[in-house]
Length: 209
Ligand code: URA
Image (cartoon, rainbow, N blue to C red; front, side):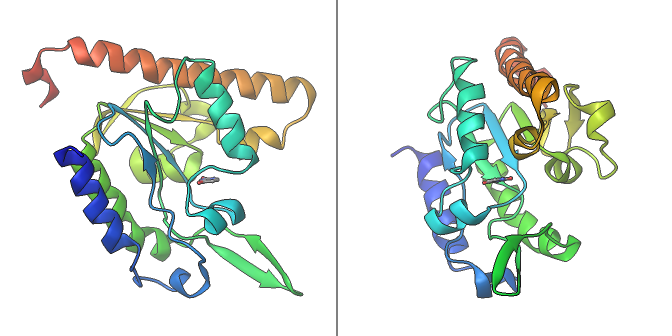
């Protein structure tokens, strides 16, 4: 393994023991992130759902299948990118014997963010693609508005080029033409992120600092 992969593996091992917030009480697995740690393109979702919690892997449910398909339409696979989430453990609520996902609280996000920050410091991507508003609010700016700002590039403290796309789970909740439109937007935003990587690689190194 290379040095970057070793560092990511070491960080993962400590994340797997994290007891930094109450989500550790209900999780089955920490979903640290996976993919190519030497990639210039990191994709960041909100947090694990039921399937991810059960397997310890990001985006393995229906939303993950849509993401994989949208990547493939850009000639990309999980081997080309690194996929992580803002929070590493499933945020859920159990009512009447049924467990469902819930949005993570601000304190859960803030307590978990250092793991993502450390991941990004090791990987040092050229481009980050945020999936969904919670991810964009953490990475791009706290008042991010998906309807107005998706598909545009922003500079953030984590990366020179950050862009946000609709979350695949949101797209799956749309019907008919809206489904087709939002799905196309996801494919286009991945294409924009991919193209930005190509352009950023050509930039003289000093302009990257
Ligand atoms: N949704 C996310 O934001 N992340 C996952 O890993 C799965 C679903």
